[in-house]
Length: 261
Image (cartoon, rainbow, N blue to C red):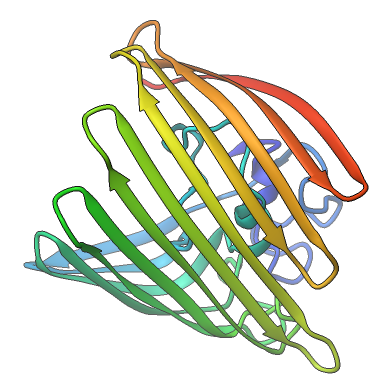
């Protein structure tokens, strides 16, 4: 990957200059290179295992832009969730409606090397409570490496995805992060609400309302956006976003165009 998103998926849990970490860049600073995933996968019956470097399971929004409705990311994803892991991840699907996950990783956002002794568990479960409602709980715990400064931490994301009818979709997500590095404390909590409406085969509209808090203060954001697909393989995603944390606020507009092939 090359571009401004690459700097978010570099191996920031590694010593500078190793794997795909460009030591001249800091997260979100500009253009760069990254190798977001490099893994092997084995499957047998209801079992599946990934070995290597792969995207995280944490959260509702994901790294790959075409798989998100909004152009921008939620505060929880950018500040409270990992982007990638390196290690082993096992999934087991005893039924069509349930999948369990468990694995071990070198902390958060690491490549095939790690810093500050990253050593953590990742696991959880996704279950269809009804034909329209799915609950997903994913947790990580242990030494997150650079993210926890060598200390221990715990995080989880809980996602309720409710397909109300053929047109309306509602998603509720809650994140918690707690880290105990030596002498300090890092607590994050967030709640995100998504409401998406399918106007036609070519147009969807949506709104995201979010609250996120760290050790210092609360921040809020409301985002409205449109997904327009002139042909099916092109998506135009304009959005307007209002962020505020007292006494400051700002309005931003963003848009991108995604071409899949």
